[in-house]
Amino acid sequence: MQFYMGQSIQGMRPTKKEKYVVNRFKNILVVVADKTDHNVILGRALTLGQRNQARLTVVNVVKDMLHIDQMPIAPESPADVQESDIKIIEELSRDTSLPIISAQLAEVQGPIRDAAELPRQPHISAPSKPAVSIQEYIIEEGHRDLKQSVAALRQAGVQVSSKVLSGTPFLEIIREVLRNKHDLVMIAAEGQSGLKKMLFGSTTMHLMRKCPCPVWVMKPSQPKQYSRILAAVDPTPLDEKRNALNMKIMDLATSLAQLEQSELHIVHAWALYREFGLTYGHIQIPKSELDKLIRETETMHGRWFSELLREYPLEKLNCQVHLLHGDAGTLIPEQAKEKEIELIVMGTVCRTGVVGLLIGNTAENVLRQVNCSVLTVKPDGFVTPVRLDN
Image 1 (cartoon, rainbow, N blue to C red):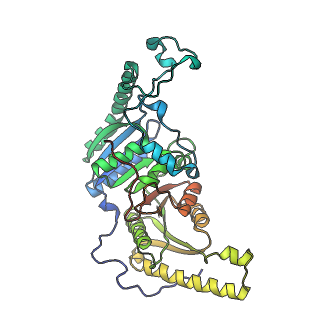
Image 2 (image 1 turned 120 degrees about the vertical axis):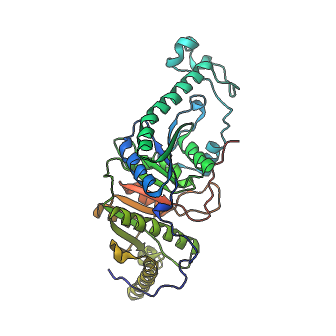
Image 3 (image 1 turned 135 degrees about the vertical axis):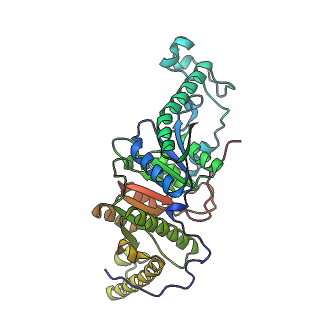
């Protein structure tokens, strides 16, 4: 691997711009689930809250029994999400409900009839009393579950509050962020299959697409401190917005590595534009010419990479730099596995300012394959498609 320590571009980081470091987070939303081991996420939230003198809000999101029959099923794969699906989910009226019919309510609602005998009722203005009672019970149970955890955090000297949200988890979490201007969402991966399933179920992937603030997804089985952190960057001074995103990633990764005394791996994967087609496609060029183009491209990316890195005091960190030739969506997960990375800091490259955006292809490919904690940040100018309730 060749690496180039080129001269820094003057003014690459605007002098008036504040660094996007970990201690900037002052208003943190901590999401817990009923079946999740809370110890890791609450422990890290406590540490961050104490270090930053931050305010913590611990929330649990419960199902909305009054509207559950109308909620769309979230796709298992990001590729299954269409902008029309997003629009349908986000424009559901919270005043619309269907009757809840289940065996649990049989005693109060009478015997269940055959589905064919039931009259079609697309809109009922008021939910049934049993449904209201069940919803109240679920919310009260959620408050009880949070009480002990919040008490422990408060006893440790952190400013903390708790609440139970009701509805579709990713929508209610984002609305909570919008209402109270949270600057970080912390959420734990669930289930026996760990983080990978959580990322590509519903809640976490939706948050990574649409939440306006950084999202920190934690793998419960990992230790309280990270030994190895990976920052995935794609520097190019030709794209101001992307370079600003790279700086956010580097700010967070370097500040975390310093605080945690972690080994930091900084990865930039590059490839010649349409390299595969030039090598194996219908329009091929002589190998000598192709090799020359590849060397020139490597030199260019190495220079850009060096210019980004020179903005940071890496000599004070236990840091390794990786300039890799190939597809980032493949190489980043390979590096994460090979180096036993415990946290990846990366950006989700999206169409800024556009409602209904989707996560970038490279980010999606990385997230499909990794099995560690992930901290994702959005580019400047990001606009969430989720709206607050009227």
